[in-house]
Amino acid sequence: MAESGFFLPVRVLSRLFRWLFLTALSAAHAAGRLSFFGGYAHLAQAQSFAAYLAPLRKAEWVVYAKRPFGGPEAVLAYLSRYTHRVAIANSRLIACDQQGVTFTWKDYRVAGRDRYKQMTRETFEFIRRFLIHVLPKGLHPIRHYGLFAKGACAGNIARARELLAVAT
Image (cartoon, rainbow, N blue to C red; front, side, top):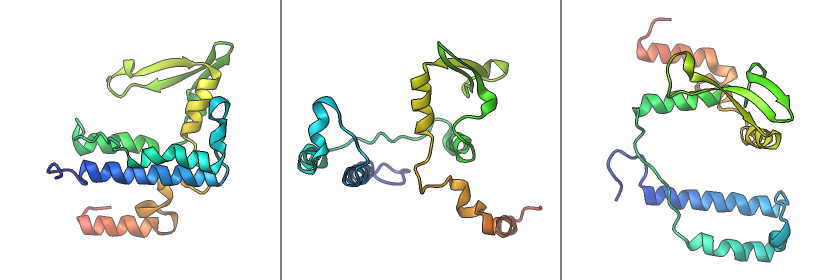
């Protein structure tokens, strides 16, 4: 039974995530978008890959879900930092040399001037982290959909203000 206040029961969420993840992984394999090396080279064959995934389809996956510490406002603030931006702005890049790539980052747990910090990562690690934030071909940032969709943005905002009885 679901804990009260959660959108979905954790067991349902874990099974849904397992199914979505393994379905997408199988599709990527079938499309030839996965590469295997060394001791895993045999997984390039469809039968080997399917046999490798079989026990994962039966295993219980754990989805850790709990109330956010700061409430809904904190969740919205966290997500809003990722919806309208690229992975990193050029202005945050400080140096690229033999030590790696140095950039500024903001520690949202700290207030004041001390929240802005510098970090240096090896070049390959920086590129790996950067690419995690690049959307795959065919996907678009969420700002292109919903309330702020380009074609209906002004009308949607006007309607939302009307419904909320908020002045422009």
